[in-house]
Image (cartoon, rainbow over all chains, first blue to last red; front, side):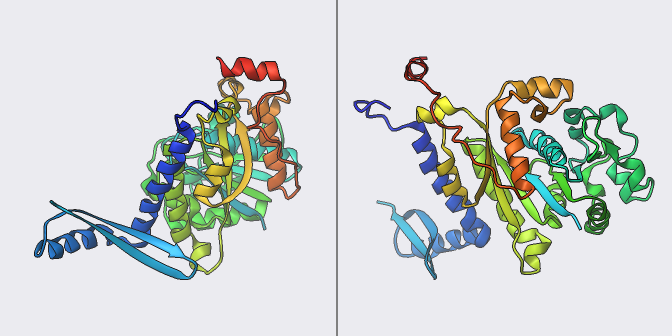
Amino acid sequence: MFPWSKKKSSASVAKDRLTIAIMSDRSHETYPFMDQLKAEIIEVVKKYIGVRTIEIKSETDGDIEALSIDVQLDK
Amino acid sequence: MGIVIAVISGKGGVGKTTATANLGLGIALNGEKCVVVDFDIGQRNLDMILGLENRVVYDMVQVMDGEASLPQALIKSKVNESLSFLAASQTKDKSVLNSEKVKKLLEELREKFDYVILDAPAGIESGYEHTIEFADAAIIVVNPEVSSIRDADRAIGILDSKSQKVKDGEEVNKYLVINRIIPQMVQNGEMLNSADILEILNIKLLGKVPEDKGVIDASNQGKPIILDEKSLAGQAYKRIATRICGNSVPMPDIEAAPKGFMKKLTGMFK
């Protein structure tokens, strides 16, 4: 509201949080196996290296649909 | 043949039943024959909002089970005779519904009315699925608030996968009503604006309804707020109902700051 106030408006925080939550909800809807897939990937990667967490995101860009798998290593 | 519109929200308490009552009455005020049906089995409320709770003798479950005829169970509104109402069962639970029964009831209603408006139960369980299964279109009611919008997206997802029209390869038209907008909060960046909500949910906007204290007073009395010409929410519902009937009405920017700089200033420092 004021140019000197650096705080992000709570409405835009709400928008960002909602966008991420809904994207994740929708990918669970399209890929109901998501949680199992995640657990199995963790098991496989674990054989070679420590894993902290895995995030799977579905992305659509025009006609191309992709699953991006983000593996965070445990150090 | 009438059109069946399900009023849905996902989350409870966002004003779905109030919207159903007002839009049903608004459609009737446009001269169309309309019936509003309470699909919230076990938690009947639409009768109270319409002020018809004392007139309920038979409910829709009794009609489905052949214990009463449809004309026996239909209740005419006191304020507009183009509007009829069919009550939910208060004693049974939603497991009494099944697709065949719902389909048959809706076919009968389609023959008698131009618009069949279904008030869906909150949540995304079987009662909700039966409400949307044979609907031609859905009106999604949300509040500008994170839990309402997220739940609405889930409800839309189920609509897109369980609706008979979608299974037949057609599309269910979906329209958004944003309810309980507080313009000053939107102005201050404390409440999601309609553009953001539309972007997140990716559906068409049917109308915006401002927060209005008169809504509680209206439901206290069983007189839908659309009957109050001065009420901002009532005026908003009137515009939405007219749009549903196929007439275009300008969409005033109810999120804009109140007129007058001083008023705006005082609002800022409240």
